[in-house]
Image (cartoon, rainbow, N blue to C red):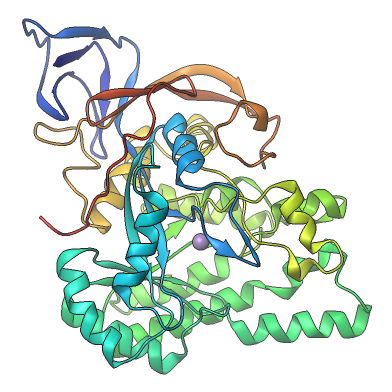
Length: 455
Ligand code: MN
């Protein structure tokens, strides 16, 4: 079956062009001005922007953590992504202690296969490093994924020696690591200190104090020095502070290659949310925490200047009831928030409409760069002949109000509840198939597994 999208404006990182797109099966067959094709179903997209399907390179679906499991599995989480215009996610498959990397990947396939409504790939979070895992890594990079995740805090953290060894091995094999940068010692010490001085940890407004900006900046700095010794590029995931950003700029000035990911929550929300009544404040408990407002303009400026490479969600959803686990002690709150469906509209509204970034940059940060960084390009991340027909028909004028009850996520709150935005994914095509329209899912569970860097 052939489909011809006529009259739209195609967006890439380079510019905007009035081009028609001819889709055949799962692929883009041709693009051109005033394209005609017999037997093709014509879809009028006049006045609309056409983006390559957005990629969300940081998600946690069906993740078991803090004694519970995220509200969204691949079923509802991928619908939330798709409804917003995201056609491919890269989720963090986690290796638990004692597991081989194959076992970890098999566990994540069991969660995702047949459930996902958008395409999906996996990063692999390495938590248990030994000779066997190091050997196994060669085959994993060759056959499954080139992208790995390392934590500098939590039970899943790796120490500096392990960090060095893993980065060295990845350099050898052609893989890359994204790293959660927060100093674990500062966080643990401050959490204890808070309990000692206040007698409890129920006041959520104390939460950001337990994870200060210095914790991020120190870990970024340490990671970059280790990466410099190894002489390999790294990715800083969910950068939240100007202090951390400055460490990266310094390393770049010295010639290091460092990629940065940030998230909408650090661009549009700030730590004042933790001063809401505790029950509500816990909904905003994420790690790293929301920061002082002045960080936002610095991160936006970095996006404007092209110094941040990607914007991902860190979608990690828990219901209001799950968040209640932190009622008596906020450190028991499962950390994370939803954001899959909201991301494109938030970037459009607060980025493009408010002239902080251009539509072309939105394409770069949401589609092109994640595809390139994680070796999914050009099948994903580009509207060109031969690419997957993952296409977002973006209505730049559509006005809507963000509210949890209208969203696909299984989470029962929306962090940006009540926010009025313009810009919406009017139609979403996944490999040629119309799967979502105006926030509704038309066709589910069509997602397939995508290997990165493996042709
Ligand atoms: Mn995360």
